Image (cartoon, rainbow, N blue to C red; front, side, top):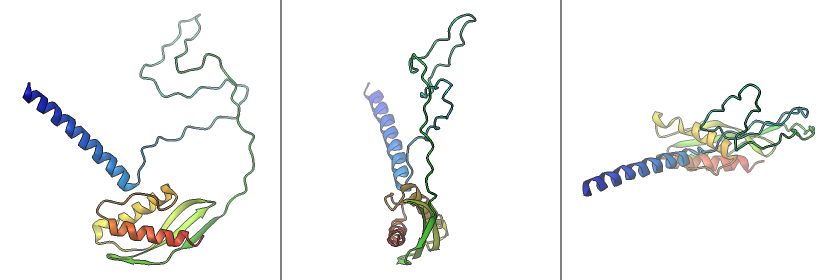
Amino acid sequence: MRKATQNIVGVLSLGVLATSWSLGQAADTGLSLETAPQPAATNNTDAPAVPTAEPSATPATPAEPGTAPSQSASQSSAPTKATAPAPTKQPATASVSQTGAAVAYKYGVIQLEVVKSGSSITAVNLIQSSTKGPDWAVVPGMLAEAAVNANGSNFGNVSGATFTTQAFKQALESALGKF
């Protein structure tokens, strides 16, 4: 019995370690575990609304001829009409870009151009980006993507590239300070 308990604890420990490592990688690269947004409702007000629900594990069964189709527990019992908000014209916001100061750090220089549309960052372009070697050349691009996704400098470090990440965030804040 003791050997079996040791094996079970060992397997569970490996599972916990693997999960922790995966979550740490997601946090380090600025990735999120969110799901994709749901599609918007249509403007067809004559058709009944189709309830959105998570896919079930059991497939829908077809109704027998001459009988009413059954509804799943996640669907509402009475159909409702879809109501969409009236379309409003929003003023087109022009994209504006600012270039930050060049930030010198241990492995080179980083300088960025930030493009914003309204209050959202739409792109981060690398003007200058030096790293500690060719294997690390992808890091500034990863950081630029993380900055766009976070809409600022509130994202995690890239493991093993702490100096580059810190210099990137300084360069990003320099450009954002000019807006």
